[in-house]
Length: 119
Image (cartoon, rainbow, N blue to C red; front, side):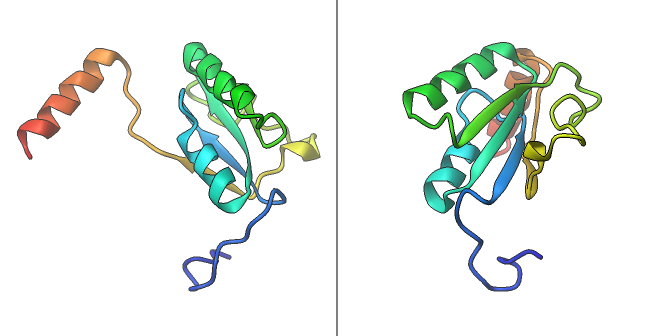
């Protein structure tokens, strides 16, 4: 069950493994989850440049045994090719996603400008 919704502390340690869909270039949630709770993570990402930047962060911080990455080439099947039903090492305790995702830099700028105008 959801420990925090029940008023308890979230479980800690690397026995807890999360999947961060669209982890991005800065791995913010896997880094926080690992630092605060000791969780291990699998991050998936469609953008290869973001994936390379994220891998650099993992390598520079010595987190290769705590955070791993997988390229997700297909937007339509966010778990397929990332998780394998036949591989028990692919088991995760939770899946998270932090939208919004934008189709392009232009779409991001347009939405960001709209939000700033409405402040």
